Image 1 (cartoon, each protein chain N blue to C red):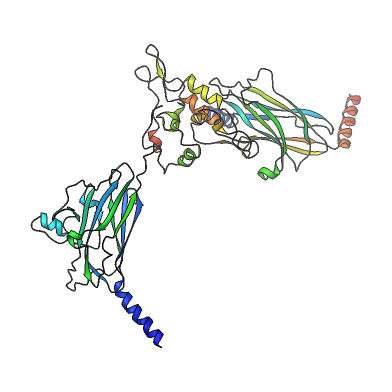
Image 2 (image 1 turned 90 degrees about the vertical axis):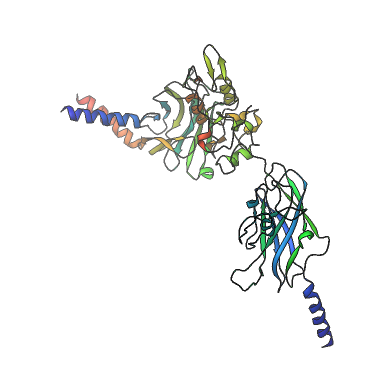
Length: 169
Length: 310
């Protein structure tokens, strides 16, 4: 029993280590026409902060809604930049719609853990939106999030079903 | 028919007049190369050339610095050394008298002969080269002429160059550079104007200015706030076409500790970014002895001939 627990602890430790770093926090489901924030989060303090890209796979659905926000307590470095670059297919050969995020800070004090930025995302039609957090090299995918966007009719049925269940109670 | 005969006659007259020709070149790394070209039917048996430095400081330091194969006999060496055997010694001779030269020498003769030990005494009938490895620090030039004291060119059907023949050849001595031209960072070092700071002993460890900071009380550290300031000034400055480039920042390239750029084609590339900061942080305020272990120099990267000081 003890052995099993130790193995489990080891596995969890390894998984925890593998997941350390930057990640996307996003809703798993959105309604058509809904806008939500997609967050970039670091689970550890990072020397130099982060720079890279948040990209929507253009073969899916949804689009950037234009808004972005960086928390007030985030230490913005001298090159701080959050810029919408749009379709970069012609530059890197990947059908991505991207934001460039220079959230770096040249300091010997690590940039704090937690939320680094929010980007507004609009679920414009039904399907599955795939969002990537991409490293500075424009290629390495650090994290992926998928957002299901059901057909409005399906959403309506789900809502009705919910009401029906409540009435029965 | 008459015309053809006349032409053949002219050719017959011209052919014997074709002399051994000598050309010289800088073969790199301080080597002066002399090529000889023989006409058809010429067989070379002996050769004596005199070299006189006309500028620079290069000398021939050792007899073995001159290679002359297939010539195998050194008459002047035999003159100076009793019990001579074919193949012994070297060809560097005294330009003013019989015998070997006093080395190092800036004026010297190359005196060689060819003895065919198989017994047929065929002589040298193929074109060849003589190389002279020079020792010096400044670009140097040499007059090359026949050594008439020793007969110049000797052989069968050999026609010597015209009297007074002389050529001048210069050899460039490369100024030693701190960064090896074989190092993977060399191309970028050249691209960014060969910044001296890249050759500071601890630059690759985060020391942008090549100087330590601190005091005798707390100790001295090579990687500290002055270096961080250089890094901050150059932080994420994009190269063209996305930005003005690192050379627009005074000493900015000195904070490119990892000698690489970061970024992508989308937003551009920067020479100084998080990878450089990581190097700086890894060595941050590490005190030199006796207050601390110190920061190792960059020699173990294998990229350096020597370091320079700021």
